Image (cartoon, rainbow, N blue to C red; front, side, top):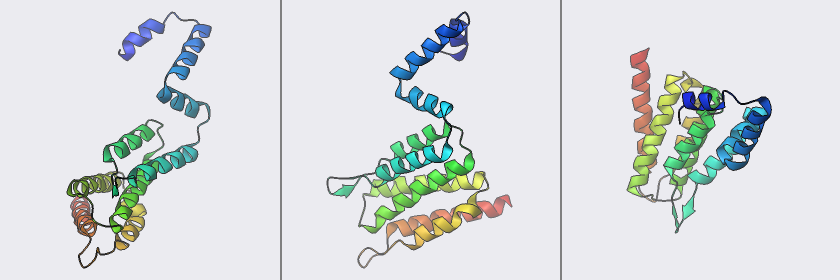
Amino acid sequence: MSKTTLRKAIKDFEAPELRELLIDVYTKSKEARELLDFFAEPDIEKKAETYRAMLIKEATRYTRRAHHPRITKLRAAIKRFQTFEPGSEAVADLMVHASVALLSIGNDGWLRERLYIQIQKFFGETLDYLLLNNLLDDFMPRIRKATGQLKRIGAFANPLSRITDAELRRIESLREQTS
């Protein structure tokens, strides 16, 4: 259904009917409940803290004796957080928080090759978002600290270290081109 169709459908509703409709939507939809709760009591920091906990849980997901974060779930949670219109700085903070959590799982041992590719893409998206919103300088110390804490795995270099270095070089060259 489009917005126009919905507007036509509720155009003749009286105030009590609209209230009843809102209550019905509130009770039947988890997403609508979350949005209406936030509309009633807007607290960005509280909502951001809830999403940080959700992202940490997903980024450090461990099943069958291996790390199995679902990057699509991380992206979906960040996108859902953006529906509250928190501002680019709050979204960037959440993206960096998830990226740091993903980098931290690389210290435990080897990951699946596909996961390295997914982490590189997510890390790149985070850096692109920071560059696009002119927040790179604000969050770079946190990113540098997380990349500096990547340890070697046995006698080998950590693949996440190589990935993050490549992405940081890429974003720096893009930054220089736009300046």
